[in-house]
Amino acid sequence: MDWDQFNQRVARLQAMSSTELSGFPLMHEGKAKRVRECPEDRDFIVMEFKDSLTAFDAIKKAERSGKGALNCAISTFMMESLRATNIIPTAFICQLSPTHQLMRRCKVVPLEVIVRNEAQGSFCKRYGLEPGTPFPSPLTEIGLKNDALHDPFFTNDDIPIDILQLLTEAEMRIIRELARSANHQLTEIFLQHRIRLLDLKFEFGRRYDTGQIVLIDEINGDTCRLVDAITGEKLDKDNFRFDLGDVMAGYVGLARHLLLDVDAILKGIDTQPSPA
Image (cartoon, rainbow, N blue to C red; front, side, top):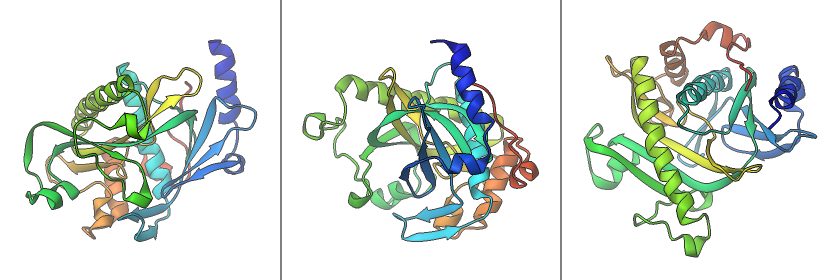
């Protein structure tokens, strides 16, 4: 790869305004983000963070000003922290604006991979366990990413790839190992900031240019269950899901634990961009 040319392409996008980036062609709109195509550069996509909050398959909805910027900055910090380990390959390249990230273009593997460090949420409901019940080791659950089917979990350890034709057995092994390793790395990173990681959701994709399996999507209070390691204060979307408290206060608390400049983020000042 010609890194000088690559960095020039990235720099051209970094020089654009939020308005210009939000004008890129829309490829997909999800509950919390929009995915936009980069004109004349099929190696990249732009991920735009929304102020939307949803829960229970979007039955519960709300808008909170600044939510997108906070989650974008938090996810940038976590992706850069993972990149620094040189262990977990990701699609993340850099942050472009307060609410936009530049990502490598990938073909999404339609799986949700949840790694649980203790019993929380739907796991407690399914098995009648008390929240916080510890596991002897992290437990991984894999489900089909399909909102219409309510993201069903597979009923055995091996995904029936011959029936669903989602991925190869080798790719499934890679995803399991990456999820395990990423959970371990993120647990350590969060603990350095006095945060305990209870569980989290991963998504993976194949890079269009190389076919490599990489971590995609976001890492923040929307995709992780997180609490203050000392006080137990909730720092994630459960505050919204279950009306446990002010969800924005939780996101702000998470950002401050990570030593991010919350005032600058909420004023629309991009504090976290970095070249690839």
